[in-house]
Image (cartoon, rainbow, N blue to C red; front, side, top):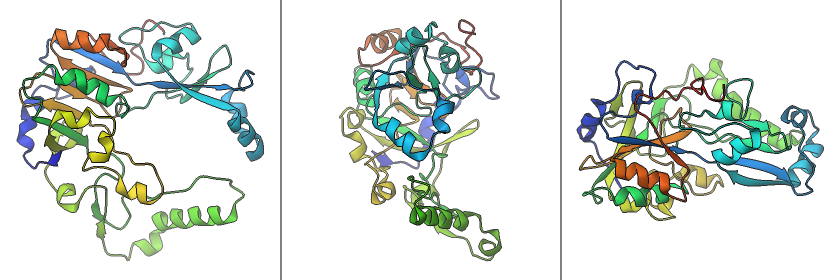
Length: 328
């Protein structure tokens, strides 16, 4: 994939999203396709190797560091589908299901809920498709376009650390986790925190270029503007996403994080579409699912894929957190 400054290639998509927003998924997903598929992002489930039920999450928060570490050592984490989650909580999976309603959360935004059988179910990742699932989806998409060698990928500009900027503060700071009683660790994190918030000294500093993952040329380049959203565009062959190690090949690979000891990574595209406009993939930053618009044949193929958990989505559907009438 190579960066492109020609953001006009996405004008046709810009014209198909609702402006102003109307409260449906078409606020961020273009209209005009025959069918739509909702690909549910994987969740996670934790259980104990001993088979004992897990304590409620609020009890875990109140544990000492040692108790917490002992419990963590006894945990096993596995992926969980939305269907498995619904079965555990006695709720119903359907195309407009919302995670909080599925796990019977009393409030919006619960990251973890305890099922009746004592397991912890963790919320799916919002904002991007699991990088390990992207190749599975792309293989289906590539069979439904006449232009697999000419696709455009868009990255949401607001992703932390992606873009550099002119300012007094770094694009991001790497805090370190560990035992709060570790004096050296605590001193390091305090130093980082004060470097970000010391307004008495920072006010006299001159703005300087703060590096991001992408170069300054790309960071200051043009964007494809949607209502409330803007994207940096790259162009290339869809086959680049069809291999398991696709993250190693992307120009937005997170080299700064790797230098700090993190595993190689690159975010999944926020937008993806071919030159023949046969389909579009949208991973909206606030959605815990990825939407694909295309032909009915394509949507059927996605929903049949054994590697993806996907459901057909009716046009004009609302995917806000309170839209799940079935599990309300």
